[in-house]
Amino acid sequence: MSAPRNGGVEERVVEALDAVAEAARNLGRAGREYLASEQGRRLRRGLATAMIVGAPLAGELPVIRRTALGRVLRFAGATALVVKGAEWLRDWDPTPPIAS
Image (tube, rainbow, N blue to C red):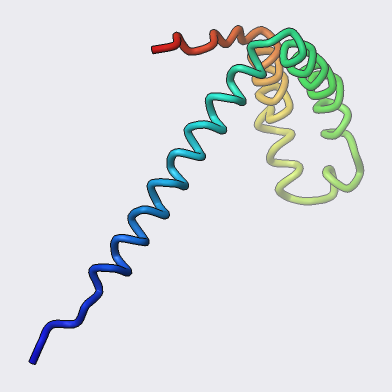
């Protein structure tokens, strides 16, 4: 009896996974370069401003306040964490990777 021939399938799977990993690296690199650009800086600042203003307002919505989880999150100061995260996002200065 001969062994099953799965080598071709395994090679194709490995090649596909390598292609996906390479695409993810390229996407991450392009995203970081965009966020480091002037357009990306404006996007980060606008998004952070919306989060800073919106987080405390969202915590006051009756839909959030009525739920047990919403009350716990308000008690725990989750809105403050969102604001700090938004401030970090606004102030983050990504440096584009050095070309090798």
